[in-house]
Amino acid sequence: MLVKDYVSVGMFDDAINTLFQLKRRGFVPRIMSCNFLMNSLIEHGKVDMALAIYGHLKVSGLNSIDYTYGILLKALCRKGNFEEARDVFREMVEVGVNPNAFTCSTYIEGLCSHKRSDSGYEALRAFRAAQWPIDTFAYTTVIRGFCSEMKLKEAVEVLFDVVNEGVAPDVYIYGALIHAYCKARNLLQALALHKDMLSNGIKTNCVIVSSILQCMCEMGMVSEVVDQFKELRDSGIFLDEVLYNIMVDALCKLGKLEEDVELLNEMEGRHMSLNVVNYTTLIDGYCLQGMKPNSTTHNRIIEGLCMFGKVKEVEAFLNTLVDKCLENYSAMVDSFCKGNFAIEAYKLFSRLSKQGKFVKKNSCRKLLSSLCLKREYDKAITLLRSMLTFNERGILPDVITYTVLLDGRLKENLKRACSLQRGKEREVEKNDDSPFWNELNDMGKEIEPDVYCIAFTSNGEILEKKHHIS
Image 1 (cartoon, rainbow, N blue to C red):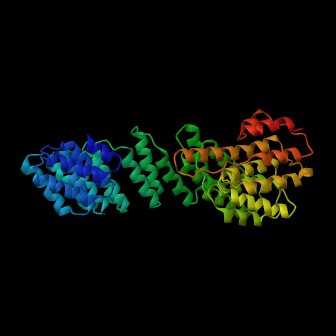
Image 2: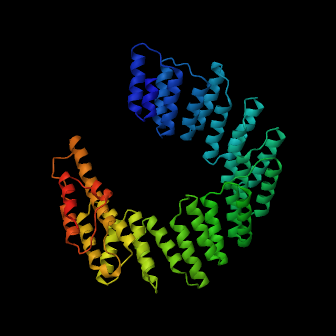
């Protein structure tokens, strides 16, 4: 049990030491614990270590079971030692351990993964002739191997073999074949296989459909892609990001850019991860059509580029816009803040301020909050004063603005207090919030702190100052 616990958290050295300590003290390690350790080592790329442990345990008199031999075969096949792998089967026969479906499939998979699918298929037929158990996965592995090598004729022959042996082809077998034919631009054969799959009562999935629609799109059948996508969406089948991306590309090629923007909004509503390709595709679509996107489209592109940290790209894109507007700048500040680029957002705000330009009050609040989270309080104060300067333009700080600042200061004090308790930081004076309240007092407007503002203050002394604010 202790060996498994160590392995589960990746502490392989401790697991191995425990195993051999048990052996030295006269305890016989459980075969299942040994199997678990060796298999985990292989999955973490420590193949030689797994083989060394097997050799030591074998010398120590370990009685291997069929699963142990399967793990040994996996290790040897990962290294490409197929001669030694064949010797394992001979040893199994000699000691009276019958190969199971796992050991047979492991050897076949090893051959196919090394682009030796012909040998893999030959081994499958030899195992079958010896009446060793062969499962559907073994056939799937061989078909996938032939497909990855683009030996489609051989892959189809294995499919016929599957049917003749009375084994029902599954969605993975059909999926591998359909993907390969789509890759070869043989759409008719791919569609025929898809139809055959559906007629056998096997449901399609988004991976298979993506292969077909991508092939259609690359072959210029863009309108058909749009129609098929809408049918799939209406049918209730699960649509993933890949399918949506194909649809985005198809709509751009058709010049249906407004529908494209709606589709991106739909993806966001489904909590799908939009990537920079989505937005650059949209930009390319506008360029190809010679059309002029509106500010809403500009903002969506800005948001998308910022989301993936494309700071230089979004600035370059903004520079290409002839008619920049308040919404564009606000969207850029908002997106920088959302993407954890508060400093870049502040630099943009400062540059705009010097040019006499400004962003919306809500964008200023988001920037204040982001700066506080970054502990950039000097910049936050400068931003606050800039907002006072732009009083006549409708972005005068209000009680919410000050609450954001006080909240940030308090959170930093709390973090420092926790670090102090854990001994990670020497004692320092906590932040003084009084400058914020002085700013509040100096303003000509009447701003009464509310319950939230008071709650966010960092010491009791400030509470008393509430009564002196008019």
